[in-house]
Image (cartoon, rainbow, N blue to C red; front, side, top):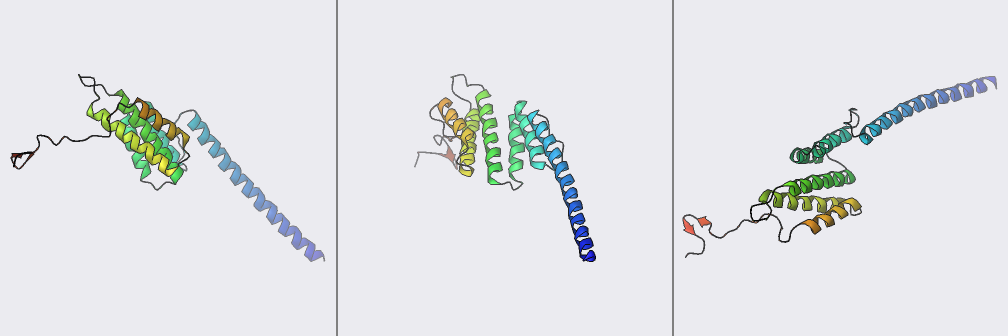
Length: 178
């Protein structure tokens, strides 16, 4: 009977030590997550290598925030190639759309008041990015709102860049001639 009690005490003691070790591990992981969340809320770059998605996402976000929309879109696109889950892909597509929309709206107009081709391209790509975000996450309300807002402010007749085929030559014969 005494040996059985000593065995049970040893078993429960080992379980208590294992529980304490697990609590210490989870506590340190919680502190690390808290630090990463604090960095994100403060708008700082994430410094922990354990959170690579957040680190790359914040770097791309900071590029867009500083007005470097072209490089922000490139950074987000590189992030898409890392094999993300669908909600993360939707978030990245949404941010690509935001940067392309801002880039398209910042472009200057032509002399006749029409949008430059670069602005048309950016706006059509923003639309595609928002639609892709909604395909990945149909309940993504911010993407729905931004897409509808973009469609309201977008001038009529922009469906992307379409090359005019009039006057193009094929092997030195103008189009329209026999």
